[in-house]
Image (cartoon, rainbow, N blue to C red; front, top):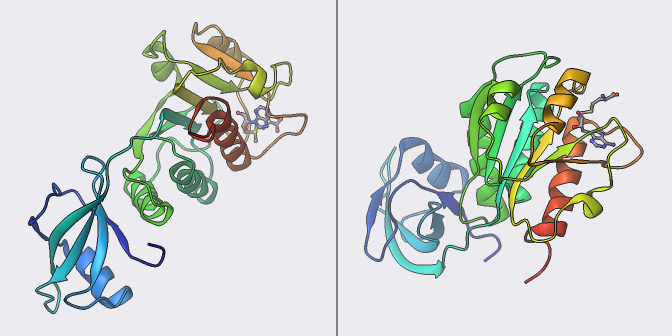
Length: 243
Ligand code: SAM
């Protein structure tokens, strides 16, 4: 299957479905991936698993897909949110791409006392999540949730949803010790370049479902911390634990 083009679509997928392609996707398939009428590719939409499809009616600027047969049933990944403070654009784009590859279901953006922006191009980040999901072989695509203030997020946080608070203050236990085995769902919280303020740290730790964890004796950049935390979480309670 490697080398076969995978495409995220919004249409329902089923045998015989004929799905028209959005113009940009038609262009991508015919001009960038140089597919021609009759060529096959794989489609996924986050709901129906993965399906083989054939490119038909390739026009100058549009094309149509004929859905053939299911290749993989939907197996949803762990119910894991990556909650990350708005860091600089380049690093944030890396974080979103790695969150898709490492199986996060959502990327929630937060504004904290020390974030240097209160907005970002969410549509661009969502497109990066889609592209990473196509490449990494996922059957869904993480949702990138628009920035909200940390306080609002914490106030609405479910008491029964574990929140792995990556706390660089250094007095938290190592991840594998701290994570309750089999949590299976939850979230990871990563702060901005300037870290969390003492007031924020106290507020987060006061959350009943917050679990402060250390990612080791070195201070990691936010993107490094996100990659490390996602991998450790998946290894402790997610889908890196093996079958
Ligand atoms: N306050 C840090 C400093 O003193 O330079 C900077 C924060 S760090 C660049 C960004 C975020 O990554 C932190 O808020 C934390 O969530 C996470 N992080 C980095 N290193 C960590 C560590 N060793 N343990 C736990 N979390 C860490």
